[in-house]
Structures are given as structure tokens and as C-alpha cells.
Image 1 (cartoon, rainbow, N blue to C red):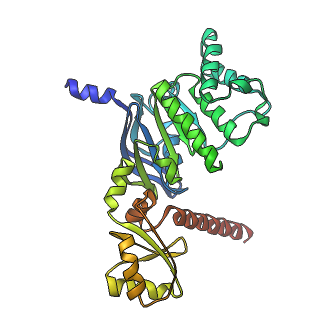
Image 2 (tube, rainbow, N blue to C red):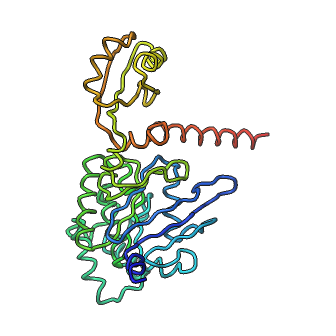
Image 3 (cartoon, helix red, strand yellow):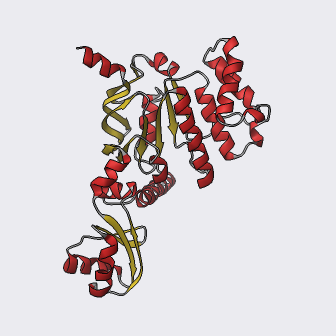
Length: 336
């Protein structure tokens, strides 16, 4: 009995059968997972996979259609106020007041959370120093770069010392160098604050920072484990070739090598053990002229492809086309 209680206390997040339906669209379709205290846990998947909807349910911004979830031991429906006191949230879209200074933004947040006045000033300095913005504390946020604003939002989310920090696409729209800088700050925050971090992303390199990741597709979790473990399960290298006749190349790969291939990101793509050793055989026996070839070790995108049959980039493009198609149908329907 003691062991069960110890395990419960070690869980920062517990989710069972969580479902969210909007009209006829099932955005999240019965997900189950646990996040241990002190873990950096990530949701990896294309836009529209259900990541943000799940975070919104865990942060009490959206009520689940079915199932249940606990954050920091509190039920997200029955104990919403307790959940909100114990979490920090950095939204995907910016929510800072650009006309206020960094300190004024943090002070407003502190007032909303009811922080005692005597702890506000030292806490502001602490979080601003952690994200490297103390020297700019009195500058208007409108003068900040995109990366600086993101760091300030993270500092704001830490003001009330949350037990769980939610980061929804924390570096979206930032250049690779700034993204790396943001993650250095996040890693330092985790060490100093001893908190649990739950993030969503569709960037492969970003997911590598996580202790464990859940890969989402169409509202469901298709895989969940440590990044290296998931990549090891793929067991093959990814080979991408550009040919003069891609359909003929796909047929030849199956007929001559017993290898199933598909089009992904504009190239004939397949997985084989020992990709570099396979390439000479490919040139010698494929029977279709090859214009370019690329071989890479398994990535998280390969994991996504192994479970879904497509890459995250292609899944996002398909989702974008579907959204555009739906908008066009709505527009034409409104004209009738």
C-alpha cells in the first residue's frame, strides 16, 4: 500500500482515457500517459495532432469530453483552482503586454496569482536573471526580440514557483540559434527549480531535449518512450533518392530488393539496415537512373513514419491542405 502511495506522489501528471470532441471532430481520442515529477516530457507531432488541445485540458482551459486527468495530484475538472495554482503556462501565441516593461509584466502576473508583496521583488530578480534579462528589466517589451520575449514569457510562467511548467511550442517561429539558446535556459531552469516540464513541439531536435516523448498523430499517442529508445526500435537507416522515374523506382525497389518505399518530402524514401552499404547495390541493380541519394541514421521523424506511414512535415502539409479545403467549402457554402 505504501508503494502505491509513493508512486502516486511521484506522478506530476496522470491521464486516463482523455477525450475532447468539438462538434463532430474528435481532436483527442482517448489518450493515456503519466509524467513523473522532475521529468521533461514532450508531445511530438504535426500541427493539428491534438497536442495543444491536450495541454489546454491539463491546464483547465478546456473541459474534457470524457476521461480524466490529474496535475500535481489535483483533478483538472473538480479541482481546477488547485491545478492552476500549481502550474505555469507559456502559450503558443505571445501574451505579453508590449507597452509594459519586463518588470511590469511580471508584477501583474504576481498580483493575479496573489504572491505576497515581500517575495515579489526578489522572485522577479531571480527569474529574470535565470533567463538573462535582468539588465533589460525596465525596457518596454515592445523593444525585445522574439527570443527575448519568449524568455520573458518563460520567466513569467515561473514567477509563482509552479510544480509543473507547460510550454506549448516554446520556440515556434524562432531561428535555430535562438531556439538552442531558449533550450539552454529551459535546461538551467529545470536544474535550479526542480520542476516538471511538459512541452509540445513539432521540431525533431527540440524533442531530443526530453527525457521521454509521446508521439501524437490524429489525436492519439502512437508511441511513448525515451528518444534514443524509440530511434533504436526503428532498426534501419533512412535512404532518400531522387530519380528520373519515381514510380518505376518504387516498383523496382520492391521487385528487386523486397524493399517497400514511399514518396516523402519529394523523394523516394525507404528504410534498410546498413544504408551506406546498400547504396552501391542500389546504383548497380535498381535499373532506374538515380540523380541524388541521401542516407541518415534513424531520427524521431523515422519513428513517426514507422508508426504513421508519413513524415511530420508531410503530415503538416496534408493538414494544411485539409484546413484550406474546409475553409473553401465553408466560403462557397455561405454564398449559396
